Every structure is written in structure tokens, then in C-alpha cells.
Amino acid sequence: MSELHQAAAAGDFDQVQEILGCKKCDPNQRDVDWGYKTPLHWAASKGDTEMARILIEHGARPCLRTEMGRTAAHYAAEAGSLAVLRLLHSFHAPLDKEDDGGDKPARLAQIYGHHECVAFLKKAEVEGQAYRKMVAEKGLSVDDFDEEWEEQGKDQHEGKIGSVS
Image 1 (cartoon, rainbow, N blue to C red):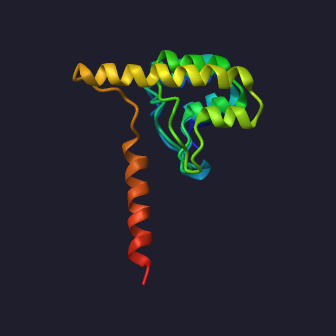
Image 2 (cartoon, rainbow, N blue to C red):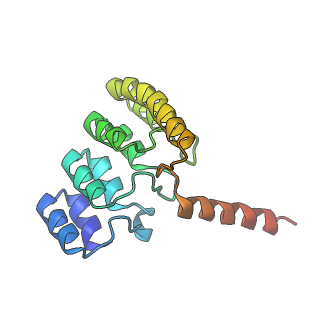
Image 3 (spheres, helix red, strand yellow):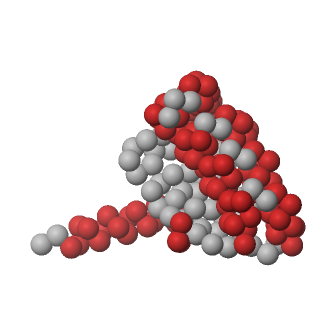
């Protein structure tokens, strides 16, 4: 776990700000010992809006996924953090990705009884899809794809196929 991961997980905003200011750590570094969580995953799981904001402002990518395919939105939804979900939406983060179990953030919010989050996510999913469509029509791109996670999934899938006799 990097110094930035530890500070984000502990909710130490001043330490995170110092680390990011000095560019000591990559805000997108994945912690292999903790399921490939990034500092943003930790902030979202804690419902720490200001921590999430500073991480994103310093380059943290909300589309990055853990080994189980979860984005920061999944963790915010599970925690019932409407404020973090709103923040992620304001940065056009993907709020409609399915994790490895097929669950979108809205489903996790529903499972945990976070009704306000469910209502927000249903609306935000539609808005996010419209935004991505508009951006694509303009020939632009949006950062909603985790290349590394997708490649790992492809490799794992090919490994399973290759090992069947």
C-alpha cells in the first residue's frame, strides 16, 4: 500500500494534499495487496467527497476498476454516499459499469437500502449515456474505459480457454 493509499484510506486530507502536491505518488496506482484499489476507491468507500475531489483534480481516473471490476462509483454506492456519487457524475465518471458479478452501482445501492442513491443513479445513468453519445458524435473521447482491467480480463479468459482439454 503506497503512502497515498494509506493517507486516503485513513481520511488524512492534509497528507494526501501534500503527497499530491509533491507528486510523490501516482493517484492511479493500484494496490495489488488490496484488490487493485486506487486511492480514489478508498475515498469513495469512505464517502469522503473532498478526498475524492482532490484526487480527481490531481489526475485520479474514476473509471479504473479493482480486480472485481468495481469502480469508485460502486464503492460510493455501497457506502450510500450520495455526495461522492454526485461528485463523480459532475466529472462525467462512468456510473453504469457492471462489476464482475454483473452489478452496477445502482444495484449495490439498492442492495444496501440507499434509496436516494438509487434514484440519483438511475437518472445519472441516462444522463451519462447521453453525454457519452454526444461526445462521440463530436468525435471526442471520454475517459470511461480501464484498458489495463479489460486486458487482464481478456488474458484470464484466454487462459481458461487454453487450459481446457
